[in-house]
Image (cartoon, rainbow, N blue to C red; front, side, top):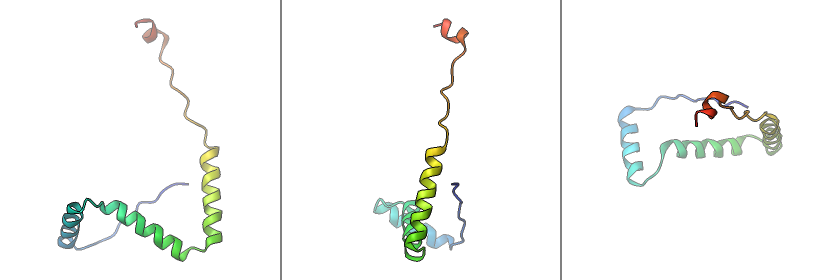
Length: 80
């Protein structure tokens, strides 16, 4: 499955203050937002739906063919 990028508006001065104080505590805004979004997902999406989606995502990831290893041209190998 593909990912979606979320965009939202927030007061610039407040965001600057937030990131400043988060950095002091070695916290990452992006990680905190991801964690909170995951908690919202778990709160509102029924367990059966989450299990279905987890299974579907897992099967899609396992079904993807791995990237073939790129072979170097014979001339480049011979030069070594």
